[in-house]
Every structure is written in structure tokens, then in C-alpha cells.
Length: 468
Image (cartoon, rainbow, N blue to C red; front, side):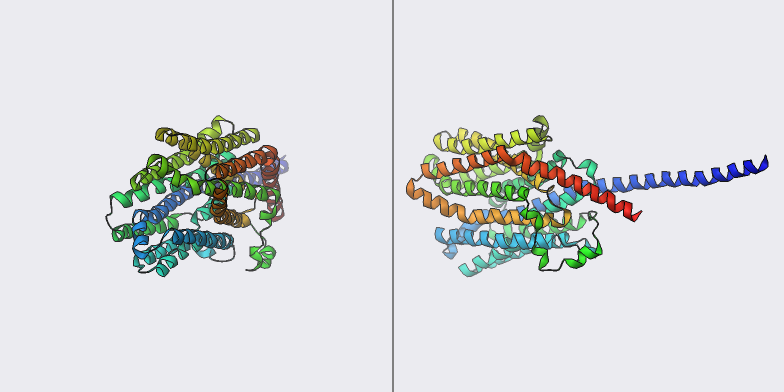
């Protein structure tokens, strides 16, 4: 009777450590998940604040820039040429910086390539501020726009970085959660658009004072970038890393998928519509309401505040209210945004009441913020982590290309009819986006996103099984 008792004792001793190990492993996993969740919240908070500071630095000198251009003899033709060249630089720089930000073989010891790209973007903006302040002729004025336009793409890089934070915490990464994070970036840009020019016009009487304040904002942005946690990277095999050389890294398979091409076409049409509309809108405000510099400043600040509210608060609320977490609800919201953007811009030209213009633009800007939030959130789910920065960069490049073509198209259409022809083009482009969303958004983008996420989960589970 003694022998079996000893066997039972030995078996019990073997089971207990195993149970203890399982408990310890579960506790360790819980701690890791909690740490990743904290990284998500801290990263989104610091990244949003960093972008806001950077955009305030860029926009605070805007009220004094026109005086500088007048002093240097930069007329409307000069300004238009600078805008086109800026779009060209942005097109090239967005693609380059987006792809470089996806590198997993460099800078891993100091927070990864995305952190380096964010630092480069902030420093480039500071260099542009300094060159603009020191400009004594038109050539220096032209040179001052190059660093920021080519190297500062922090907004798109932060979208990719936020996606990486969410990928590390799948249980906190629903469509609504991702949309909320993307919306915070838009909110920061909107607030900066409101605060920067207003502060430059009211708090600083000289270009020098505004420039010094801008340097302070860039410094604060850099500090916040360094405070951002490094997200957990997706595991890659050594064989895969070895194949990815510098030149081959510019090949982005995710950008050739039907979902990515669909989103590019939608963004291109919307950007074209925006720039065609802008060619006639500013002159219309002057003609109908006798807008001066202060009136334009108030209008821009209103747009910035409305955009910030739409991305920071209204986007998430509307997504929940109209079932934006589900495919059909998301499509309905996008269709409503397309209708509001097209009809709102048309009606804004028909009214002679300034309060009605403000009311219409509240709806227009809210719809724009909502549609950009959903596009950004869905884009982050159609590409693997190693390509997401590149995909956002290519989308930004497509928008820059449309930004170059839009003003030219608007000018050409104005020869047909100064108002009705550009407005008809704007309505036609939004109608095209409406039709595309109605027919293909669910099947091409949302279904592709679900299939991709399922495939990623299966690959991670298979990798864990092989390692165990």
C-alpha cells in the first residue's frame, strides 16, 4: 500500500509546478497586454500633441507671410508656381518618407525608422521657418519651402505608427477604435489651423516673434516624439529581412491591391473636387461679401475648429450612432458624406447670406472630417505592418498629384463658364465617388480588410505553433 501512495505523491508534485507555471504565464501575458494597451494610449496622446505643435509652428507665421511676399515682389503668379512646386515636392517626398518609415533593419536601437522620420520632419519644418525668416529675395523664399514640403510627412507616418499600436492590441482595435485614433490626428491639424494663424495675428506683431514661437513649438514637438513608446513589431523571418534591400523596398505590393487602388481613386476625385472649387471660392467670397484679411482669418479659424471637432468627437459619435462598425452602416455614412460635400458646396454658391455659408460649411467640413477618418482607419487594415507607412505615403502622393492638376483644371473650366462649369465638375466628381462607394466599398475595401485581418491572425498562430 505504500508504493502506490508514493507514486501518487510524485504525480501530485509533478502537476502542481505545471499549474503554477500556467498561472505565471497567464499573469505575464496579462502584464504584457496591459503594457501594450498603455503604449497605445500614450502613443496616440503624445503623437497627436506632437503633430498639433508642429502644425502650430508651421501656421503661426501665415499672417505675416503675405507681407513678406509683397516685400520680395512675389505676385499671384509667383505664389501659384510655388504651390505647384510644393505639390510636386510633396508627391516625391511622401512616397520616399513613407517607405523609409517602414524599414525594420535600421535604427531599431533608437526607436525605429518611424521615429527617425518624425524627427526629420520636425527638423525640416524648423529649417524652413529659419530660411523663411532670413529670406531677402525670391530665391530664398522658394528655397524655404523645400525642406518641409519634401521631408515633413509626420501626419501620414503617425497614421502608420498608430496602426502599429493597434495591431499590438487586437482586442482594442475595432474599426471604431482605429477611426477614433485617426480622428485625433485630424483634430490636432484642425486645432492648429485655428490656433496658429489666430495667434500669429493677435499675439505677435512681427515675423521675428512668430518665428521664435514657431521654433519653441517645434522643440516641444520633438520632445513629444521622443516620449512616444516604441510599438511591438510584427515578427519577420531573417530570410525575409535579408531580401529587402534599399531599392526593392520601394516596391509596395499592398498599393496594387484592389482595395488600395479603390481608395486612391476616391481620394484623387475628392482632392480634384476640392482644388477646382477653391479656384472660384475665394474670389466669390470677396465679390459677394466683401471679405478682407480679418474675414478670411475668422473663416479659416471656423473651418479649423469645425474640422477638429468633427475628427476628435463627432466622428466617433456618428460612427456609433449610425452603426459605422458594421459594413452597411459605414457605407451609408460615406454616401451621406458624399451628398453633403457635393450639394453643400453647390448651395454655398447660391446663397447671399453669410450665416448660411457658415452653416453649410459646418456640414461640409464635418463630412470631410468623417470621410477622412473612415478612409484612414480602413487603409490601416488593408496592408501588413511592413507596408502601411508606404501605403499612406503613396496615398498622400496621389493627393499631391491631384493638388497639382486641380487648380489647372479649375482654371481651364472657368474659360467655359466662370462659375457653373467648375461647379458642375465638382458635383460630377462627388457623384462619381458616391457611385464608387455605393457599388464597391463594401466588397473591395471592407471585405478585403476582413480577409486580410483573418489571414494575418492565422499566420501569427501558425508562427507561434512552430516556435513552441
